[in-house]
Length: 372
Image (tube, rainbow, N blue to C red; front, side, top):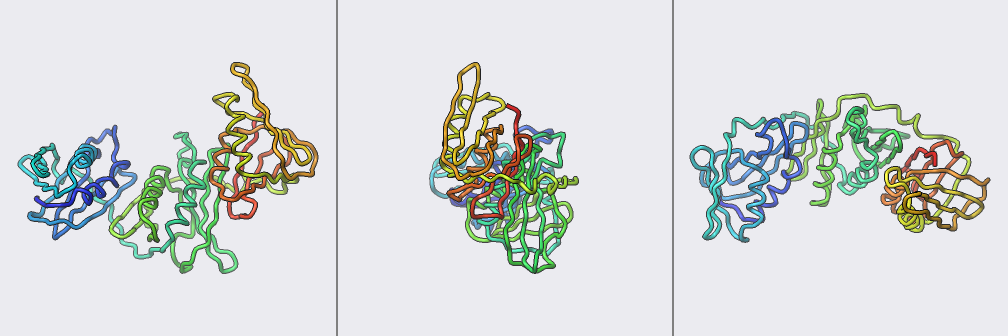
């Protein structure tokens, strides 16, 4: 195997593998990426057996072949090379030689047949989705995913298709048992497309998908086949193994008929929570909201470091209410709301509350109360 490639092209290709490869894995081969040189292009493939990525880029291929090589070591080296042509040559015993101007480097590689095969798929039932829509949905739900590995079915975002009055939408839902985030987005697609039943997309896979959406603009294609989500954008193919489990009935977690509504400036509430939570219990981040007519007081108290109180002007005309929340949960929600004003719906100090953008009913966030 021998090819010539521009440094920036090679670096762009290697960059996409860096978060997928496992740093500590029982299978050492998975710390490698597979390089394949053939007919005027170089392809790369990396996997941790749960998330797989494949991409390719044009290169001057002088000799076809393939080899597995440490993805991190190769990336770190290429990153430091001069901005010019790199000559990559596979030598005896799967060593890789890199030449860049007057520099020569040799890296230990591994036989290509030791590397897992890229998962195959046959579906042609792809749906085209605007990347910005999907990125927005991921950002508005990913922070609510559970990190408790014993509740593996909550370690991802629930994704389903809904059809209402002829309109088709995608829905993403995430919960860790203490909070829940739900977002709906309308999409244009054939009714026969995509899965009608819901699936659970793992957190790591969504992080990789979000990264792909951040580096390139425009639309992408996605489909489900068997236990995989398949995403294609230009030359990049991302395969994510879905979580095999039953997602809880999230509708039961969303309270209905909440009687009290508070309208408040998002930026003012967010800034106040940041300040007041500095003097809260550093583990629980517990704060208290005391709501009266057109005012909200935010309290925190930590006997070891002090206490804090701040008052905000709000729109509220109901009965007085005092309720405790985890300040971090509230701030996570507010950081993902673009509206200037937020509606907070409540019943009493023991019932969960709902936060929504004032002018966007498609985004719903539920937070369980705390005993302060």
